[in-house]
Length: 105
Image (cartoon, rainbow, N blue to C red):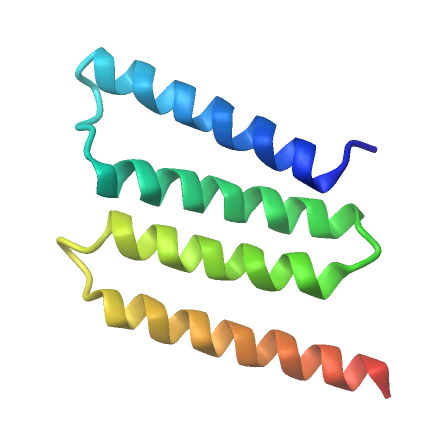
């Protein structure tokens, strides 16, 4: 199995490359907020998928969910208030923490 860091680097560079190609073709408007939102969202998805195959399920799931929430907040900020996404991230963190605490018993 590929290491988490190597897979994350591959995922981030590949998604950034695809985003730049789509931006260069005029399909997606490129700005710093869009780049950060897409990269964080895809990194979060990668982290959650990695957690399924990892021994440390909760750590990668937690940070994957936080990354997705931050990325979604950046991508949807013109439409959705970012504090809603931060609230969702905090709820997600508390749920994952509660599950982890119950599993340790």
